[in-house]
Each structure stands twice: as structure tokens, then as C-alpha cells.
Image (cartoon, rainbow, N blue to C red; front, side, top):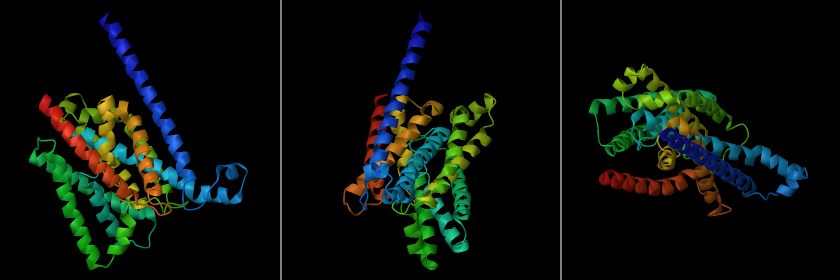
Length: 337
């Protein structure tokens, strides 16, 4: 009888997950169509289907690349946040609260100074190396301080990120690249056109790797002693997770700019509904991240049309509100238990 009830429970969860997938996919498709249809330039889907050259050119050069970059960015940043929260076993850790974004900014500043005329891939590589080093420093700091309060961990990461950002700004002023760096790093999809977003496709293999290593990441988040006892190479698994986080974050920062809160908010919203197992929530996290970024981008384009509000501004306002709600929610839940 108990085995039958367990099977029914698993089937219910599976059906619930499938319905969630379908709803998120439908919402993403609807938002994507709406995103392609809006903009400063007049656009008509009927003219596009009739083979009008103007609409075809506009879709292929600007509208479709922008929509694809939004989808990949939302999925990549959400996935990066989910990995960091899993391997640190802390729901308030993400690239924006662990200082990874700020280390990427420093890497981009170094790339502008040392390799300003090089390709975007060189800039991604430099940003990746600096971001990885900074994220490893954050992890080492957590292990050294042995912080047990979940609310203190993101505060430490944000404090360290502010220090790194201040150092980066100082050298940017010294070498007169502050305007160049600021325009580069402010999250904005308006400048995304064909030929300037394809690096984001490199984040797709990372998503595949995460799917196959999801179970190991989950075990690694339970602690070094526990994962080693189960035969896992804890340090190598954690290092792989940090490499994926640093690489995907660098891709987004160099291509689109710095967008906060996505890796923090989206995994927490999914875990409230589906639990904390990484492999079971990976697809929902990626889809919800894309939907969230798409909705914020559309809002920024219609709120002051025909002008446009940067995606980083919209996400910062909405994300800070949701982050505050999550803090109170977790605090109340912890107090109740």
C-alpha cells in the first residue's frame, strides 16, 4: 500500500512538472512573438509572412537576435545562480551577491586596457579568468569564516563586490575609460544585432554539462565530508561548478552587460514550488529565467515608448523588491520552524 501511494505521489509530481513546463513554454513563445513585434520601427507580421523585404531584414538583423539573446541570457544567469546556491547550500548566493558580476567588470576593464582592439572572445576569456579567481576567493572566504547564518553570506559577497567595483572604478578613472566601461557594462539589449550576440550560444553546452552533473552538484552541496563518503571528488565537482558559473556570467557581461538579481530570484521562486533538487528544477529554472527577463525587457520597451529603459534598471527595481520579499519569507519560515 505504501509503495502504491509513493508511486501515485511521484506520478503527481511528474504531471505537475510537465504542466509547469508546458505553461512556461507557451508563455515564453507568446512573449517572444510580442517582443519581435514591438520596437521603434514599425513592424507587421502580415507583411513578414508575405515576404516583405523590410520586415524580413528587420527580423533577421535586429528583432530575432534580440529575442534569442534574451532567452539565452535569462536561462544562463538563472542556471548560474542555481549552481551557486546548490554547491554552497545557501539560497541567497548568486553571481550578483557573490561578487562574480563585479569581478567580471574588473576583467572587462583589464580587457579594455590590455586588449582593446582584440575580439570579443579575448575579452570573454579575460573576464572569465578574473571572475573565476574572484569566485574562488569568495568560496575560500566562506570556508575560512565558517559563516552559519544564511543571511550573512550574501552580505559578505556584496561587500566584497563593492570593494572590487570601487577598485575597478578607480583604475577606470585613472586611465580615462570610465565612459567606455560604463556604456559597455550597463545591461542593455537595444544594441544586440546580428553578429554581436552569437557568443551567448557558448552557454548552451554549459547547460548540457550541468544537466549531466546535476546529481553530483547536489551531493557536493551537502558538504565535503558527506560527498567524499559517497565516493564523490568534492573539490573537482565544486571547481567545475565555479568554472561554469564564471564562464556563463562572463559571456553575458561581455555581450549584454551586467544584469543583477536574476540568478538569485528565479531559482528561489522555482524552489518554493518544486523543491531544491537541481536536476529536477533545472529546466523550470531556465524557462522561468527566460520568461522573467523577456517580461522585464518588454516592460522597459513599452513604459516610455518610443524610448527604452535599460533592462538592468527594470530588473534591479523588480529584483530588489522580490529579494526583500524572499528575505522576509525565509526569515518567517525559519522562525516558524
